[in-house]
Length: 259
Length: 259
Image (cartoon, rainbow over all chains, first blue to last red; front, top):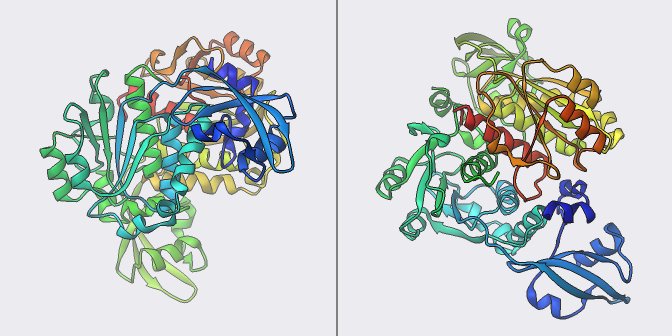
């Protein structure tokens, strides 16, 4: 049904532009007032979707319902919209990712792809072999990171946005996890078995930990084992971090019957 | 062992640069003569890996063995190298992908990621809803496409390069498949079940077909069914083509115990 709705709206062709907008997302308070024409969403509705007064487009509220927005009026300054919500919000899968702080360009891809695939939370953490300055990127300090999450969710035609932290210490992040979670750490070097051989119970929350691009330190591996993380690998091929994250999410979602 | 070798060599940090070179790949004939200093691989060995005379680095022959190259001499014109091959070539998984011609920027990502994940063949085909001009891109006519395959293989620390065709008609491509292959077409709109529910026999070749970004036409779906393709989906989320391909490959490789 999602995809049929999407079929009627912006075709998936849009999915390959840098900020895909199969679904136009709004903060709840933004739906209570007109949308300024200077807003990129207004530009997209008028110039890409080519909607005119009386036309509708697919819209959603961040972490809220999805439905249709109708263009009531267009002035030089703003678009007046009405909203009709048809699809209740469903929370994303209870999957938490812990990720060693990657270079900002890699983090941008990870933010978009994990929001599109659907996870509950992302923690970008300081690790022994992660470059500390990555935490100082404008990606994190300008709020840009939120736009990548919204682009990923809009791409996926969903309104759920993962909770994100950045810059925590790895040790703090894994010690503050929910006690019940299944825990798997991806590790190319010391993992005894492939991720597909670690069958997580498919009803409980799952935490997947990915080291930084240089891998885990010995101390981090010790802490992971203390904290009951199983170590798993993705085969013998060395994958980019963003590719490994998409592959691992696909494997665990397939185990849950979601893909 | 691959990963141990890689641990000793360029750290996976290199994996995030645009052309990752965890492994320096050569055509067989290139190993019979010095490497010009103007070659980007020579620049990488001297300026990124910082190798000096007597030092070794990880090297491989495209679709051939892998091992170590030793820097025998550096002149202002060229690098003199000796090679010691330690690891026999292993053919990639017998997985063939048929992909509706995507925009060139998407095709670049697909070439790199599928070569890194390991497939036997890629056929980028003309489909009813694919933009025909995508086949005219310099990506395909300049030979650039081969560099993306080699970058993906080098990233993965493997020497196997998929066989690639581009611009065939979809109908010609699927009618020339090996008769024995398992056949699955990804389809967001009419697939009865998720890819994880289609259990391909894990010993035979597998063909996965991905429509263009706008999806399959009705006629193409009819032909897929005639040609014994099962239709499968990846859940309700609308994924970018390149994300869907990585996810689907991860799921089928996990079913084969490879990830």
